[in-house]
Length: 487
Image 1 (tube, rainbow, N blue to C red):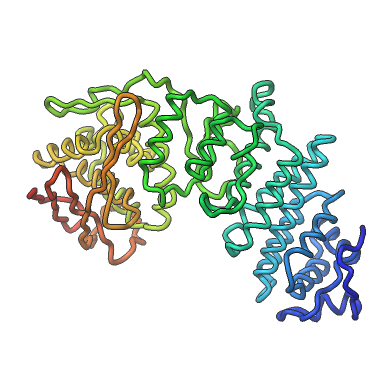
Image 2 (tube, rainbow, N blue to C red; image 1 turned 60 degrees about the vertical axis):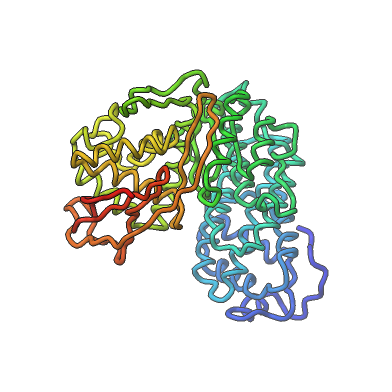
């Protein structure tokens, strides 16, 4: 392997490797075949001595990512990113001490270069071993992402973006010919990885290859340009569906859309429930239902008002809420607690849920579906959904109003405003912001089904402005609404 740094090394490599542990050396070690030999050893299997020496080299290398990038570009010219190498990087993060930042940065550059060099080789001669190397490298890129500084994203993105520009993905053309093939899966995975490291839309920096290259469907290119989000539909969505999806995303609070991508699994041959993809956020699964298929007007039991909307649009909205719930529950555990309180109260009573065509057993078996299912109605018409819950509250059934307030809280992102939606028959979504209020939740004796490790000092949403009226509710000792008023 050629020497990629010409600076003269004044001491022998073993001295440099160990001298820098715990502190940054002022000089940069030569990245030569001896260092490559260490990485060969840790790539082949567990070798603690070689691993510790390589970690010491990382600790002593304080100058730049450029030299490590040059080294790994050369190193992976004829080598694979192995699972053992991934194990080494995990070990390095634990052992690097003050050099953890350098280790994380170097590991990301290594994985990105493995992807680039692997794409070059696969363009000439695809093989299972090359595909496995690509998969392992991208798994690591998603694993290490949260350990990196924001500035470290750019070189990784540039390497990956350059890789697919030089060596185009086998997507979307091959999807039509061989749906569900591993080459297609790997192309989807590569798009997800690039999107995870891409600069924010409007930052003035480079844009992903899939936002400009004619090799990708116009839908993918336009969705990124409009929203900075990845849409993988392989051109399956028609103009009406794309227009509706665009209006839905524009209406949704942008700071909540911490998603990996919008994906149409059927168009890519993917199994939505078992796709095996490495992700840096939840997927939004989009089902391409025809736009002329409306929701059931019987979903609403209000006198004189039974709104409908395209199934495609509100299903997509429910899928977004499902993804948002994943991140918001992790950040605000009080949301999950209130959800569990609602289910413990409603139990198997059908009249205690807003969706009359969904059996209560479904929610009890799949509790994470309560809010997405309610969002199905909320996005058809939020005001009508709330009024249904209020009518049930008037006859002493409080669980639906609790559910509506919980969904409003989820959509607030923890702030003092939530969002109300209305979808017309063409699937165009409009919205209005609504103030909400919170009260301390006296969860002293939560139901037996609620986990005992409930967070302290909880605040539940107990007030919301709807149609010019302020609805305010009080909580009982178990955190459920029991009294309310409108003014």
